[in-house]
Length: 371
Image 1: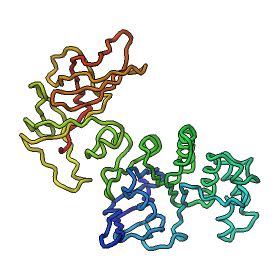
Image 2 (image 1 turned 180 degrees about the vertical axis):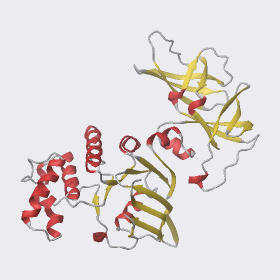
Image 3 (image 1 turned 135 degrees about the horizontal axis):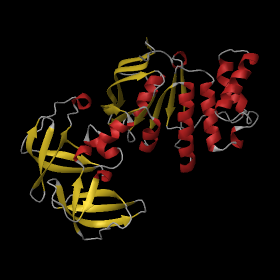
Image 4 (image 1 turned 90 degrees about the horizontal axis):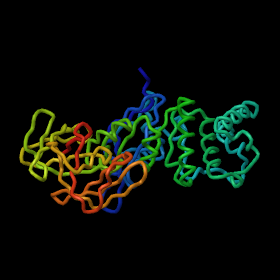
């Protein structure tokens, strides 16, 4: 079993703004294993950066405990936590060469020059910048500056690497390249990493696990697959990728399966999620009350005829052929609008605007959540 690299227990941060206290982070619990890359994901103001800053020691928690490798670090100064921090703006010294930027931390620690040089050269090799040691930050591209910032942290051999939206200043193409490079490097070094982002594609492609936050609280923690395929709240379903959220009246409850009335007189059955773990409230489904059916666009078929009991009568609002698939916007009989993404097969019919069709939801890839 892997050793715990970091543990947050009921970590809370309250800021006093005017007369009203603001709970920026609300009783966050998290256990991170050695070698994991965990992303904090959520909209601006959700508490992800404040949480990262408390782990680093830049902010002290109002309540709770922060443990790094089994040692209580809740009130320990930044320089004694053994962490490395990569900032959004890289924070390189413009008057220093690449070599001296990377060596700075080792020199501050009192290490001798003959011990520093091999460490710096190795760190620059790891990030692919071994030929730039005599250049200055102004002579580097944005991606190269980002890698110098990484090398400066890596050379210190931190217990924990913290990264606060490190790719947000790069163009789209370079971001795609750098997130792959960072993930490769993190795996190669086996370093434990916390990574803050508001970009869901970064989180989904880089993380071992994702912590989705909203209004200071943890909405869900899980692997990218778990977060995408089994969202535990309407917020997570709507924030990660695109999800159709269709509110239906419950007609029957059988264990973990709900059956709901479908517009047009039919019925639809799917599993019912009970996300008590993250929402910390008892989830109760009641016959005659509404539940929210969650289904991704790629799990919907659009057909002209169907005898399927779970068919949803619909009208095509728009259809866009994009080569590999057809993107439909549909209006159900209860006036709710949904999106479907249907793989294109040669010769298949593409339904035009205003066509009357049926939307077939894949019951094995859909689920009910409390409405």
